[in-house]
Image (cartoon, rainbow, N blue to C red; front, side, top):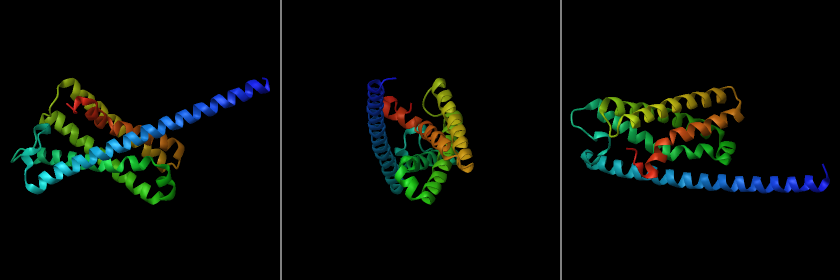
Length: 193
């Protein structure tokens, strides 16, 4: 291979790496801002209505139903864990946080993972038992998403415990994406329905 061809190839690789890095940074910024906005919206709307005792404003998944303790608990758990996930998830992907504050990264990751498991479990309850809005294909899709959340979470945890952090980061990103599946659906105009 001639020196000119080799230099040209290196230049193209450099440009491709820069474009990929810029696209990744842009995707991450949009995702973080969107999730923060969604998390703050969820926390403020449901938090303020709960403080006022106006649970009837909770219209999704058949909302608050007086006397239906398990169903209402599932709705509350779903809302609370959704807010936690939106606010804590993206922080896990920031390399500066991960490298400078490893103890925070570990604890935030544990909280994120437990919240994701609780959120998906509550979601399954609301879809299959409580009778959430939507139809059979949407319920099946949500179930597949929950199974993927559990699988990717287990794999991310497995590789973190094995101290194989390169593989852990791959599974953690997959975990983040499947946990964010409902968020992507909400912002796509489907509204989660």
